[in-house]
Amino acid sequence: MAATTSIHRAARSPQMKGLARLGLAARATIYLLIGWLALLLAIGKRSGETDQRGALLEVARHNGGSILLWVITIGLAGYALWRWSEAAFGVVGEGRKKGPRVQSFVRGCVYAFFAVNAFGLVRHAHQQSQVHQQQTSTARAMAHPLGRWAVGILGVIVVIVGLVQIVEGFTHKFEKYLDEHRMSPATRRTVTVLGTVGTVARGVVFILAGVFVVRAAYDFDPNKARGLDGALRSLEGTSAGPWLLGAAAVGLMAFGLYGFAEAKWRRT
Image (tube, rainbow, N blue to C red; front, side, top):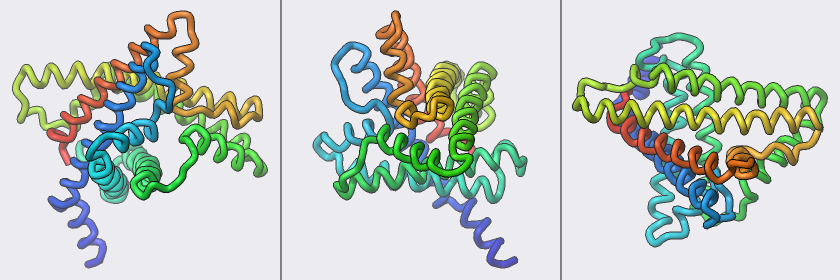
């Protein structure tokens, strides 16, 4: 009992709240960079990865990038720990509802994966591209009995997550997690616009990524699991490609800017 109480206090401590805000800022930086890279792709100025790993590589190639990469890595790890603490003890604004706690646990796992990848880049370890990693993981999963079904279900879950984000964006559900009393009216309106546009755009990209995973399972072809980079490039391949990709890029940058506001005003 005493150990549980100590862990709960640690989860609600100022240090954990600081890690949460650093993690939110790290996530915001990554999405801002992904949006910028997607915009460069839309205007024909880029051909490299347009996903989380591509964003981290972009950070690493600039002067002082290794220091910022360390900060982002620590932030991503802190974000994962914070989400796991929410899964264990409840989400601020949601209490101990099971649904939000499960979502926090899954988000913690996802960002722990990103933190490990970022640490590999910090250590200059050789890594496959994020797309190749996803395809390899999908192929391994499909090699097992019922693995194809598991991959398909995962793709459907990603699509559902995207749909939920779109609904949350249009209904402004994200506002209940913010301490809006600390914002001026003008700031509140700006954050609402950024949160709406950014969350909806993120949801659309998630849906596209999930569809690729479902197609990979349906066609029994792991090469079709293309993740965020593939989702954005699929927009490029349409008749209105550059415009759609550019709109998605602006939306993801809006989510990044909203993420910095969340890092400052999130109720933790």
